[in-house]
Length: 527
Image (tube, rainbow, N blue to C red; front, side, top):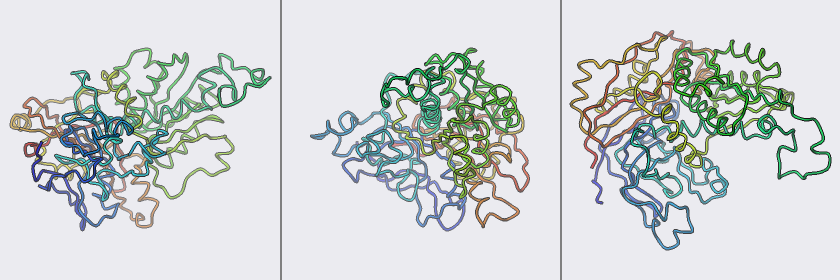
């Protein structure tokens, strides 16, 4: 298939703030035998893209933004199908032109030590899409380095009622939430509660079965009341909640309570709406609370504290809250991006509670099979477009991509009012605009929430902990966003009413909410 010499991309330019442009650029080509070229059907725009857009990350040359995509293979390097490919990652043998794939936010080889043991997010060849080092996914075409180890091949038998937008969740949000859950539930410190065996015998094969090991203290029925807190109910927090309940149900854990915690009413409302779509048996185990109510509930229900905390936010106050909620020998599973230069807990605090902690970037490529399986099985909860409980909500035209960046950055779009909107009616002007759209591109935006003194965004934490942030006017910081491109013309897409604009004080620090907004953007036809 001959690719066009030029194609459309969204590119960020240096020299001034917020210089984002939709441009006609040379179409990427194969530069290494391991490369693949993907026609982008959906691509993500996340908060890390907006950090550079806001001037928080220096760069000296224009680059194409975006680090998550769903797409179709249109060109493959010579490594694919070559002699010896059977000794390399499986995709080098079976990936074909026309296959649909999902990409995580980094490339990975699947051949180095870290990839082989299941941690591709720290691959020795890892590069971040949508950075000065690797052109991103907000384009008609994207070059994927180490494609045989990076991409995930979507099964052809996927349900027809699962919209393409939903697979964008698999590029980051859903795997990260799932990762937070298994890092906690799989820890040896939680195993006695789940398996009913005391430590260290519960560990199993790595310790010898010596006389007396099983003759110590016994785990009683009352000891097996598992308690887990989720701190932060943004998009990743919601996915962590769904994954957690799915794992506990699958393992037939008989008695457990999940404390879903967030200070923002809109986020809690989103979590409640999600729970209404789950089975009564699952939802009955969850209580959705603000911070003060959660502290009181954990103290009253457990006395000792929760067994594990999934910390999703990524700032100091969230970590301190996690520490306060957990029991001695409890587990903190933190997937939030921490940028504060000073960690709020010292060695004495960690030692006093025997804290077990897991921090860091999700190995998305390794988590893909689990994430896609969960998305397909729980598409009643995670799939769909529009509605109070949907993660994908809104549609706008691509011709306004630059304007869309500006409105999101200024909080005109993506606002979550104190009360969720009561209507999603289509205005006459929006309806006319939709009817005129030919090849579509969708922009999925995780909308910002009202201000909160409890969970400032990671970028906000960075600013507030550095000298240049001592101004009395802290910058308003963007929440995560997703940009998506679609090659399928449609005249039936809905444009939902913009959410009401909220008013914020000039000192507000804003953070993301559980809402994903789908914005439809028109581009030149994908060739």
